Amino acid sequence: MTKFLRDWRYPFVAAVLAVAFGGASFAADDPVPNAPAPACKPESFRVMLDVGHTVDQPGATSARGVAEHVFNLRLAKRIERALRDGGFVRTRLLVVRGSGRKQLLARAKAANAEKPDLLLSIHHDDVQSRYHAQWRFEGRERIYSDRFAGWSLFVSQQNRQFDASLAFAKTLGAALRAKNLPFTMHHAEAIPGEGREVLDRDAGVFRYDALIVLKDSDVPAVLLEAGVIVNRAEEILLATPARQDVVAAAVLSAVQGFCAERK
Ligand SMILES: [Zn+2]
Image 1 (cartoon, helix red, strand yellow):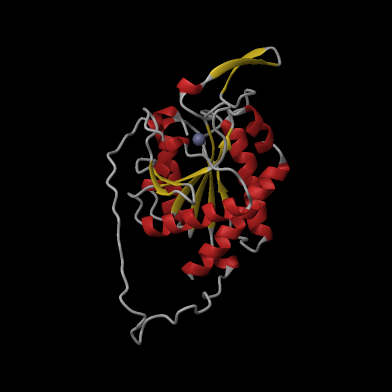
Image 2 (cartoon, rainbow, N blue to C red):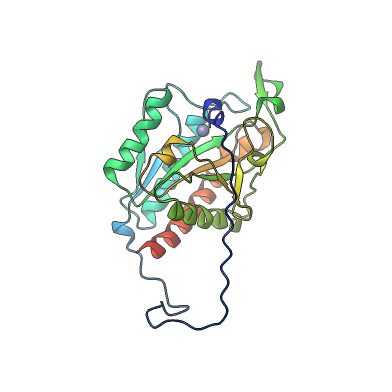
């Protein structure tokens, strides 16, 4: 994410719902416990993969000077291929041009026009500037931070389908963890620019209400930070097809689960 997106700070109200069941009785019209999930029809389920940032405003810069947008596009294409190979043939990339708020609004507008079943925004991460240090790579001064590594997930409570968005985020977080990919909690740190509310610690899901692509989209929407590209070691891994394929396989698994639940 870019810094200007992070300037939005919201007070957090933790809503804890405790639902206690006194007994194991079920009404006649309750779903049968442990009934198999309805079949998912991948060929009619539409996933929109939003490629974060633009060529004009490419987001973060990696420890070796590569633009985040390059990472985002490469991974999104890999995920698109995995989903299509998995039968989700109506998956499509959303690549936007331009800069500023206009290009962000264009993403939500596209999602609201096409009404996909799921919007997944693909990003790669940076850390706050207090953690940045300098090094030389190929003769040039570059910014890096090896302090944090890993993926994280974001949902907006202002999204009209927040419950579904959170459900997919949890499913994706579980799938990424099942692949033994590390996740980072640095967005929860109580410092300026971070302090995100943790919605699900085990699934690496944070609340970020103000993200335009999430809050202004009328469809279930989740933002994936696939890894920290200012981390010198993780940048190398994130650039490999092997890592991209593992992430893509996790996304496919999560979409299959979400599709089955939705249909
Ligand atoms: Zn980003």
